[in-house]
Image (cartoon, rainbow, N blue to C red; front, side, top):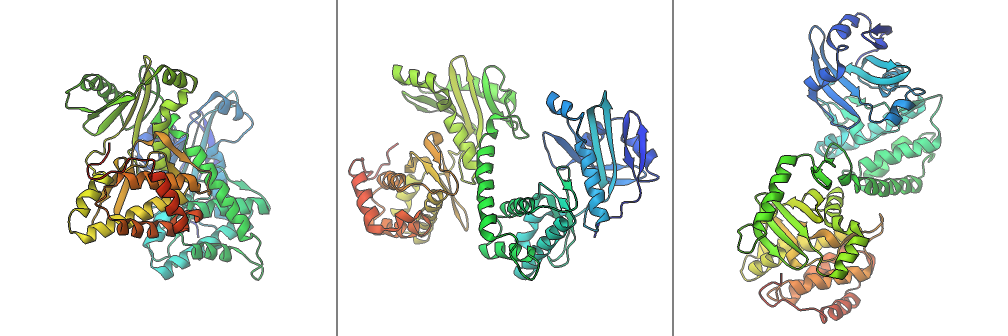
Length: 534
């Protein structure tokens, strides 16, 4: 069951730290960790980057390899709360010992320590035995054969049920916090990890069980089929099959979690995190951490040089903005085209950041787009930096090329992939307000065709699980139809629509009604004959 039985621990008070350690390891702890736990963790192999803690694989001489987790105090509020709360390290240590005593699989807890001054927490750490050759469950499930995959799902449900019956509520139960060892799904070792938010008691109430199972299923929704969802729920139930957690209640809780996830992660591109920072030098905004501040400044200086007519880096110059290219980065500078535009931008400054924010949100939802790199406002100017995707062909250009030739395989692949892609986009509640061929880039692979949307200023995201409404679907269909050259025949467009409607929102499945609405919308547009419209 457990990775090792937790022996009776002994208290220690050394080097300003108080805590517990397994017997006969106090000297190792004192000489190799307590002098500076954060430095020891930083010298090890970082495993799960986080703003709130540093988790590392550390080799301690004369002891072996351990997991060292050092928690950070991120605010004065958190420091004040520590006067009446246990540290996260202490909580995880207690939880690990609880699970180990209950016979549930967990890495053996070895020690925890707290450093307090005047009762307030200043530092804390947790040490456990390191588990080699383990991976998160969501990585293990896809590579299992069908029968072993089903067996593994059943074993996981039984484990979660046993955990709840033992009175343990994990409170952060997702597929990244359950690890699986090597081997087939019916025999591989399983371990519960990341226990610092847990609660222990005589029993876990139904509401907590429901929340736990919803969080578990939500974390696996990308890898499970509907039938496998039922396997997970059925194996969790007991008492002769009595349904303690009705499927409808669990599914409703999963939908609420997804809405919350989208709302939370959609805002992260403007917050301090392991991926983004608000440090953009002069001015205000945000940038990805993998774009250094030095590179950001160099690119913005280069933008001013390349924004002049005739320069090789100038990609587009218009009344509303200037676009320049700098190797793997594109810079878009927004400009107000009129006095009214300047007034509107002043009254609604969030409009400046729409493209950056929407591109991030598309990434959260798994929709291909140009990676948003930075958003900067300084000296009355607004800049947005994106990944440069100019190496990819535009949908309108590729369609013209393929349908002027005779490569039927590539024609069919592009038609089918684009139809299913747009249908899934609409069904998933994602609307691009300017969905022309010029704004859809194509990635042709040996087996699949992928798509990236650009110019994301006018995107809209409908509350999950609401699809895009029929009016906007028709608008997108008309925009796309008008921008694709007439070399794509009417029969090919009809075949495209028949595929689209299989995955599109319900109102779009009536071919005649939709065709009539699209035709009316097309009558108001300029239709591309041969040379695509920019």
